[in-house]
Image (cartoon, rainbow, N blue to C red):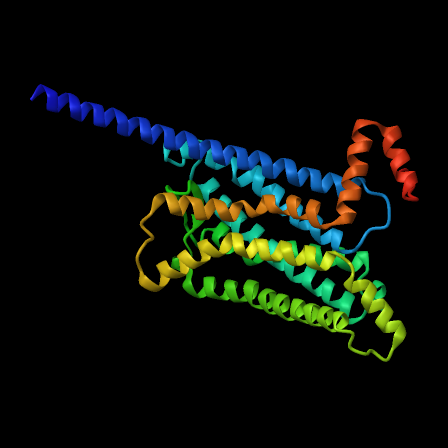
Length: 330
């Protein structure tokens, strides 16, 4: 009898140890992810703002994406570190509702921004001779301001108390309960995903068709147009921007599929560890941008090099700028 009791106590202690270790691991992963998101997006923003040379309009869209991801890393991710240890939300219902609202707003801003990026790349290929007059910096900034304001307004009803937030004790984040507002949720999904997905599919489909046409040597009678088109298609921003969009949907698709499964079947997905993984795999998208920009954008690598040299030694930064024909004080 005594041996059986000691065995049960040993199992109990082992379960407590495993539970504590799991909580510490999850909390540590969230903390590391938050620090990486903040650091990488601050570096992206500082790199673009520091660069004084000729830049593409797409950089303003990339800045918008970086700001959205930075807000995620500063305001959303840190609040999940302590709940991952305790399994409870201790910050109150109001903050939980605000976090849920902020998640949807930043996600909508990102989706809309990808739509504008696809439009920008489409115009660069569709109208290569008029692109610089059609896509001006002022127009781009106006579209970004409109995107942030419209996303904030579309998602505000839950913030005003029309919806309740729910703490997800498996992923340790607050999420809005959209099931209580089915009609509004469907309308919001159509307004956000509808134009964005259609634009992205159409625009990049056209870009890749034109790339194949140029590579195959198909005749284009207007030589000036053909030259401008070939130059624009050689711009690595097309494949880089597509990689950003592709990584975003790959990151969030597991969670989207699970949510669709739960809504169709009416049952919850019963696997806490997998649920934790797919939620934070989606959040991990906020970190991919820096990796993709560094690997696929020569312009960003140049701007990052100038920024690093400027931070380490202003003289070296000035010398590097002069080597590429730029004045760092402009």
